[in-house]
Structures are given as C-alpha cells and as structure tokens.
Image (tube, rainbow, N blue to C red):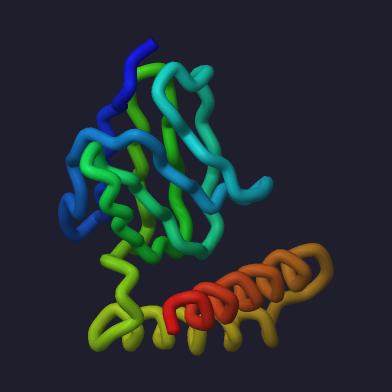
Length: 134
C-alpha cells in the first residue's frame, strides 16, 4: 500500500496544485468524500465547496471550487474545476465567488420546474462555501 498519491488541481485559467498528498477531501455532488492512496477508481462531479489536500508534511491546503470533475484512482486524484482558487476567503477569491453567487441567484429566479431546484441548490452551496471561507 502506497502512503501518498499525486494530487493535481487545474482550472481553465491555470494549474493551482501539483503535489504528493496523503489524502484529498473532495466536495462531490453526492456528498463529501476523502480520496486516499489505493482508492478504487471513480469519477465524480463536484459541487461548490472547499477541497482540502493534505501534503506529505501534514500541511492542509484549502481550495474553493465551484464545480467540475474529479478522477480518482489508486495512485492519483486529478481535479478539473470550472473555477478554483486558494480558499483563503480573502480578496479576489471572495470577490469572484460573490460574482458567481450573484449570477446564480439571477438564474435561479428565472429557472422553472426541476431546473429551479437544481439552481436553488447551487445557490445554497455557494452561500455555504462563502460562509466556510470566513
């Protein structure tokens, strides 16, 4: 059994992380999950939330993500995020997430039927993410 796995986080703008990790906590759309070395292969969709990667030295780094996909296997976890930033709750990260929230609220007001439920859940997830960053 390996003690570490390769963790990569990329967004359309840039690569945010590439490091050896002992575990990665992922805000999957079906619920939070933790990927560790020797994990069974799986691909999951992300919901807005905080992704946490624990490095080999025990340092935990948080990243705010708004959605995307994660591919996990025995020796790696690769996250392709729609938007991601270091989740420090400061400056541009917070402003960008507040912009996403404003747009999501507008779309939720216009949505109908099942789409309205999905849009309202996305708004709630963004609000929760912003609160978690405080």
